[in-house]
Length: 339
Ligand SMILES: Cc1cc2nc3c(=O)[nH]c(=O)nc-3n(C[C@H](O)[C@H](O)[C@H](O)COP(=O)(O)O)c2cc1C
Image (cartoon, rainbow, N blue to C red; front, side, top):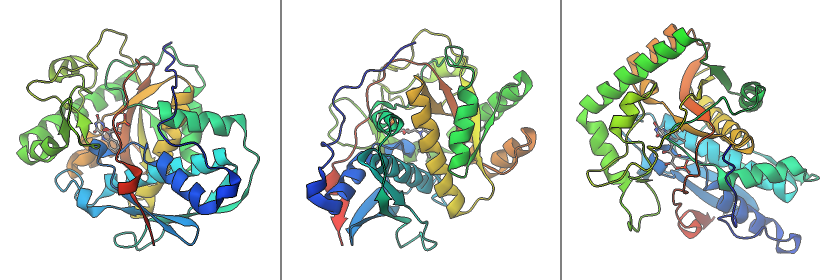
């Protein structure tokens, strides 16, 4: 099993108690920005207000072609909120994180400390996992994982209001593979999707601190040969660095929610954060097969064919992968403001 070793975490040291609550809130945001987001858009803004941390979705980062209702944007923000809560627990605080219904203009949530707690070794492990978690689009092997892991991941999702439906029967995997393939082709035929992705692709040396490095991909040829075709992030000159030899038999799962409203999307993001961090602590990497969820008809077909209860929000592949370099994040100073 490849154990990805943490170097120094990519955020400043945890502020000591004397620096007070506002310094801790800023630190929670510094950690939260390492959450995953679609095309690494990092579609969040933080506001420090009355010793709490408001989290806003940033509409200027909307992906109108593939995410017209900002569903995946809210999911990304939910993952950031979950990461902030992990940071708070590691710092010795429980937090409240109510969802605000006026999410389109106002904050999605306001994170505030509700009391001290004794930090456990698990709290520290989960914080460490934020620094080590990676999207890995290369071969992933679930056979090297503990047999109990799928059920632990289901519990992690359920604790945040999501449900993780494992796709394990060969017939179901084939059905999903077919749907992903059809969706991938359909989305590619709609040229707008590629046009939308192009501004988020990054070549080596690019100064942007968002977007997806064009070498963080498996490349179209290897992806087409695999059991599940993945979204490709190559450019004409990039080298698909996640195309590597290895057993490719991931655990595959659909993350669902009971309804399909903003609260469900936010909960899906929290559940995604919890699942990915738990998987990281077990030595697993993950990536996505979201193409069928991004088309209304294929999303409905996915629900019918896999007999899902609830609404599909994301499709994940999880397993032991390789050591993958991190994807950049924006500077905290561009993300956080004082009210
Ligand atoms: C809501 C959401 C949707 C995503 N969709 C895809 C996807 O369809 N294909 C993919 O390869 N990665 C997908 N990603 C992963 C992002 O590209 C990745 O999180 C981002 O590039 C940052 O890289 P990191 O996760 O390694 O930090 C998605 C992430 C989120 C949160």
